[in-house]
Image 1: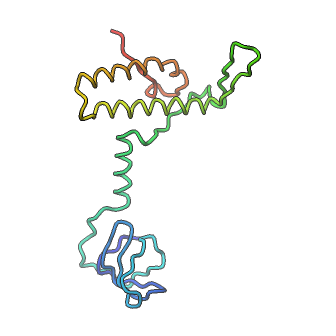
Image 2: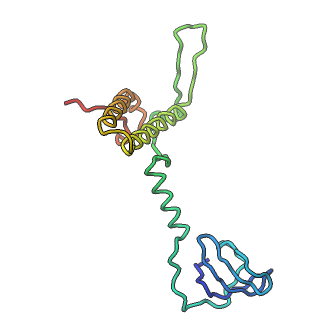
Image 3: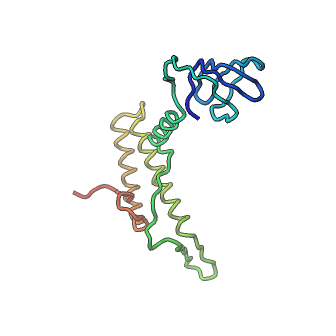
Length: 178
């Protein structure tokens, strides 16, 4: 349904005729002859437009799409949105076998996709930690640098798992040798 402006006349099967008095983010506030002031969701399919208010200025508030885009941006900035990271083709459907040295103990088999997901989550959480350190208001630049060096070393320790990634841009990268 298109966005309706304040002053538009509508009809509802239960409440009768009414006039939109407020255009909120997800709902309209409508004054009905029979029901008084009622708030109905914008997705309500029972509303019939009787007469649009063409003189009303266009709605300049936020739309649901605006809010969704803002949330995506904020969540992405803080690493809360997990990017889809593809597993290397040769590993799909495979398993990781962890074999203990003691033959009396059973080996542990883990689907490679499960293990890969945990590696990706670890990488994403390290990135969030890195962002939090860099934007921390109390830590000095020297303290931030020291903590950042530890994270770089962790990335370097995890480069072994790069073999699992399909795309090189998803790899762990440690300190570059000079």
